[in-house]
Image (cartoon, rainbow, N blue to C red; front, side, top):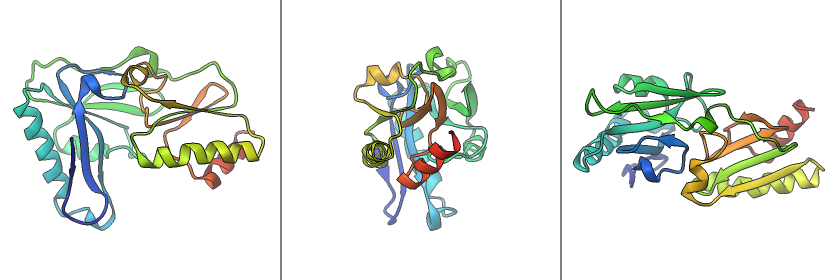
Length: 207
């Protein structure tokens, strides 16, 4: 489900039953928020509250146990604000390295506590060089994934791009944030969707 404010700008929420969410979580019976974004001048007007309340009402109407969403202990790019989630009653269900937190809002105090899948809690791969796992669910990743690959090729930087193209692959991904997961020499680097300039700066810093 995709709900957008009538205001112009980035003000929307996107959610799906957790069983079908393209993230490695175990949260059967929950509704999972894929993306929740209220930006710039649209903040502070109650739009986030309205969108979240619509999501909660829909989840309750469908008999869900609650809501889940991936965030972090401190605000990170492309992740929902943890302070806002806590303010709205979300609790911490699980953690994953290096900085991810699974928040949940149960509708019943006896509801099962969701969790990250084990293979993603300590992200690591065996391949060397840069390896980017991503989905095409976000237009920014669909755009910048191929651009970064071309940039790396032009600068003789080892790079492999892996587009996750089904729910099963996403459930078994090596990192919890499947929208964009960049590794270098096997280690997780960032969830931030990089421009060519930022990528080159990162590559230089990791030499």
